[in-house]
Structures are given as C-alpha cells and as structure tokens.
Image 1 (cartoon, rainbow over the protein chains, first blue to last red):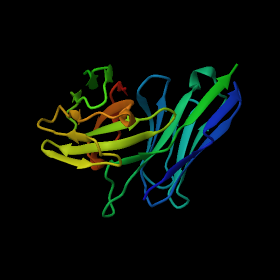
Image 2: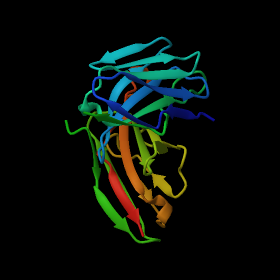
Image 3: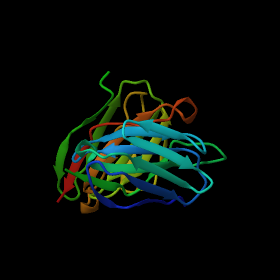
Length: 115
Length: 114
C-alpha cells in the first residue's frame, strides 16, 4: 500500500528565509505532483514531476524528484507572505508498470510566512 | 472555459438522508475523480472514472456511488448519510496518464451531516 508522508506538517518562517518541505513515499512511483491550497479554497496545481531527477521552478518555489530515494522536495527561496498556504504532494499509484492517475495525497504542510 | 464546476457549494443533511453532488467539466477530459478532504488532512480518492460508462473504486468508496453517462458529468451519490461523511468533497478531471496527467479541481462542496 502506498503511503505518502510530508514533513514538517506545520512551518512558520520569516519573510526572506529559505526552507524545504519534504515528501516521502513508500512504493515505486515516478510521478509526483505538488498542489497549493489556500484556506477554504480548492487545490491549485504547482508542479508535475514525471521522471527521476525532474526539477521544476516557478518564482520562489522549486520542486525536485528522486525516485530512487522515493523523495520529493519543495524548496522555498526568500519567502514572502503571499506564499502562506497549505502545500500537498501527491503520488501516482503505478499499476502494471504504468501510471494510473490515481493519487495518494500527503497530509499537507501548513506554511505561515511571518513579516 | 468554466473548468470543473460543482453544485451545491454547501449542504446540511440529516442522518439517513440521501443526496447527489454534481460535477461537470468542459475541458473534454476523459478522466474524472471524486475526493473527500477531512479537516487538516489531505485528499482521499473516493471513486474515479476513465471515461463514460467506466468507473472504479478509490481508497474510501464505502457509502458512495457514482455513474458516468457522459464525458462531461460525474455525479456522486450519498445514500443514507452518516456523520462520518461530513467533509469537503472535491471533483477533479484530467487527460489520461500519457497525455499530461495534471488534475484540475472544482471549487468543492462542503457537506455537514447532523
């Protein structure tokens, strides 16, 4: 059974600082997604990582995937208040060696960026 | 394009009542999904569909039913509502895995069962 763990679960950081959110998963997969959720809102897609070694960057956020370590990271550079949200990673369940689009989500990391 | 739309936005049900959550997408996506999100938690997959007439169970299907008669619509039926079904329900859609698999989410339905 695929399990997805994120840490930390809660992150309070100051503006201008850097930090990394970690997403570990328990079985083989080479597709991982990062989503952002603002309070009371729906999920917004941030990154789609489709292979080992994939790295994607958008603004102050950079995501990477290491399928051998079963680990993805979401790195925040010089945080600003607008990045305050909950961030979820989600891992694709593989079947018969292929992707299924069935996702297992992590429990999320609540990021609070303080001025 | 409206994307993924869901109705209603909010609903309060009494224990034992039934209801249908509606979901429609206008992106011509083959794949559609229903998730639930409990407070402070990630999303859990209830049911999904890879095309009209084809549905399959996800992680937490008990107490729910789905149908997929058209590409656009994927309603979720709750029979005999229970307090444990109090949650926020999200519908999503995507292309198949080989064609870009990013899922697009609707705004959600907040359901309370009392």
